[in-house]
Amino acid sequence: QVQLVESGGGSVQAGGSLRLSCVASGGTYSRYYMAWFRQRPGQEREGVAVISNRDGVRTYSESVKGRFTISRDNPKNTLYLQMNDLKPEDTAMYYCAANAVVYGLQSSYYDYWGQGTQVTVSS
Image (cartoon, rainbow, N blue to C red; front, side, top):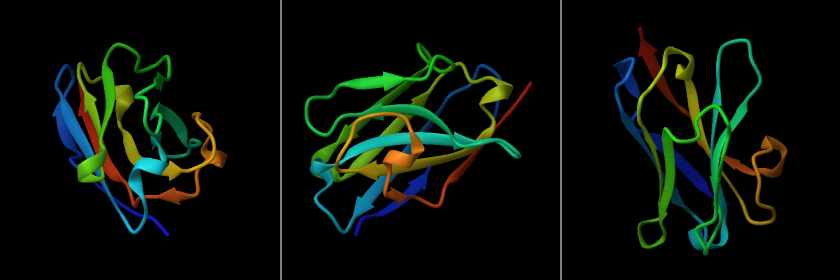
């Protein structure tokens, strides 16, 4: 059983930056594909970025490509999301997620989820 705890959310103005962190415990972190998702009020959860378990392969949604960077530090059991040039439409609850089976940005792939951290971007 993996526990995930996100931090780093907050309120920023458009054009600003935030760095989200997600610390994992209770499992072998290096086994897991790790991803960030976000959910706006009244909308479905959206995959933002995913990173593979060992070789560093990454995939981003079109809406964040070129602005967000996902990374991981396996010895520290930590996942990051560096978010630059933030826009009001990036406002959402951001979740990290883990699964040990398949690489991708579909929420149904993921078995473990954090509680979320809120990001609010004002214009």
